[in-house]
Image (cartoon, rainbow, N blue to C red; front, side):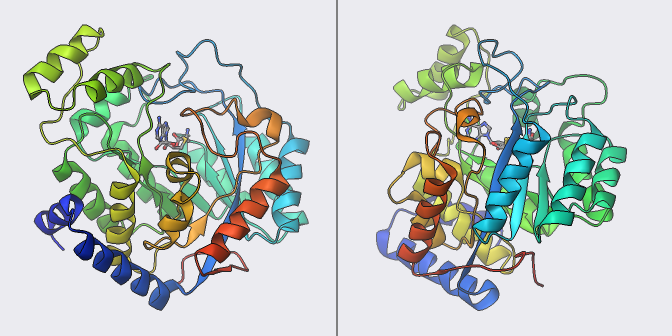
Length: 368
Ligand code: SAH
């Protein structure tokens, strides 16, 4: 598939042709990674962040968020639950919090590896190569860092630099290569329907997944958070869907924000997310592809299951202690924010069964 063919699929609205696409992606998924759905327990370590990403609810500039950082014991409880529930992996994610010191994280990794048979995935943002090496040597298996969009202008606008050590777009792609060089399995992905993104951008994102030969590819619809600059701009744009580009540019400038407006906007919806999952599966048949929380948030009843039926083979149940979940509000109404870990677990298993699949066993790494 080239860019043009991918764009054509992303725009496809004929139900029969779409059914065909999803059926094909599901068959490729079955042939290459089987029926097992790998479960990755997610622990949101900290919502402290030094960055100001325009879309994210835990950006440093969002001053009314109560900030937290889990204790080592709280993280270890998450690891214990993941192990008891039979998961193969613990994912530790956080804002870009340098208060999470390299050694603290390394100790956690060593403890988890010593006490449980879990693979460890990290999603802690842009850190120093020394930290990444330290964590790898401590036993971490995988690292997730999304490049969010391959439109460099858009990337620059939505990620205001935080200092001279800021990686920027090229640096983020470079980081993925560095991480792979350190022996990590690498994961990345994008948001779908970021205001300013075009269909051609999204098609290039998909080609970039293949070029990087990613082991894991997580994507989700962009969800507007009203307490963010981009969320406010998105609200204005959503209210004026038919407005011509000039008019929409004027409208975003009016909310105090000179924002690049797409003349060919991608909808931030689940149908587009399912097309992205399916096309990603066709491009990288043996990769691990989650049906993500953003998809589940958009459609609590069917989102995750439909994702699994469109080419995905991974789910990431949230095992963050319930009292902190609402604080990791990268977008509003995030699914599972009020549940106990047991409820979150039961829902995940029920959805895997509903999708006609079986819960995976073992670490669930990429098998080439
Ligand atoms: N600080 C880490 C983890 C970020 S949270 C890092 O930078 O890698 C994980 C992902 O959530 C982000 O990569 C982003 O793609 C997604 N995300 C953040 N805000 C979002 C929003 N408003 N809508 C949809 N996805 C969002």
